[in-house]
Amino acid sequence: MNYKIKFHTKWSDFDANKHMRHTAYNDFAAEARLRFLKENGFGVDAMEKHQLGPILFSENTIFKREIKLGEDIYVELLLEAASKNGERFKIMHHIYKEDGTLSATISVYLAWIDMVKRKLTSPPKAFLQTLSNINKTIDFEEIILKTK
Image (cartoon, helix red, strand yellow):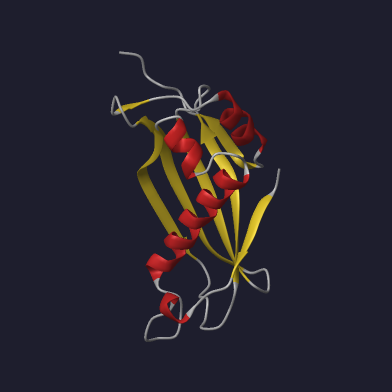
């Protein structure tokens, strides 16, 4: 499954140099992830029902081309890595200018936490299926969890 979403940028996404603020890139990436989850039946209500929440371990952004004031963008999600049980996973975001030029890549390393036990946990099987359907990066890898 290819997941790519268009965003209209706004004045507050830009800095005094009239290019997108570095933190705005990450905000759009987070919004794309949450919209993907919601569109695939795993929005905030479903997370509350299952008493789950996503947690972020790391976020790495590489800037390639500036996005200027007034340009719209596209954010594409790709699965970069995942553990077999879906407890941990990495999402690669490609952020494109409206003309299709790659502007930035953002890689995030995430996990699911049981909101009651405050421990990492696996998501429901339906989410695992959705996650496995996302297009994968060329260098996709399995995350091997260490046993105690």
